[in-house]
Length: 265
Ligand SMILES: [Zn+2]
Image (cartoon, rainbow, N blue to C red; front, side, top):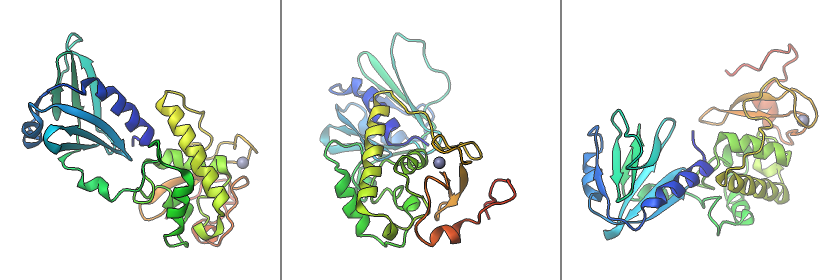
């Protein structure tokens, strides 16, 4: 799933259309009403908010795009070879054309993003403020669950979560109560800097994400993976560099002595 940094990159590409009155159509007919609502309007801004893109048109019309797993945007010049297939939405300017593929969320209005926490990549977002938000929720929640809760801070997905916690030496299985402010702030600062660099096209080598069973890049201990939280997202961590301070790890994972990867119940 694209995370916050990918959405900011896509927003940057779509901004070639800002300032133009656009033609809109829905070739596959899935979002005809949305297309007619923005057809003929001037695109005024494109914002990435967490994992959402907000295309703001004149007349206070806002088009929200959420890509989930398979959605994508393409931007090309009219002179480039044409697309094949049936995109959900085409936005056509004088020189550029944006096509949206596979939806799955193209909706009018920004109501759905009002409940989101601050976007970690927004210039005004300060990690210490996010720590304050974390301190206001149930402190028994696991760090690996709280940091991907988009209502608390928007933009971090599973990949950045795993990398961030490894760099900060914090276990995803620690409860918020067992991690001090300094560690949380340093984790969020690392995430913010690394994701901003990724927007600019620089991605660090992955330390733990999808590296289960391979050696930790710091200590050589095999990286572990296991489902975590209500959504059962797969957490990746080094048990030596990221020891859990609380009881959650004992509940959440049984040390494997067989050499086999842990089994998700
Ligand atoms: Zn390690």
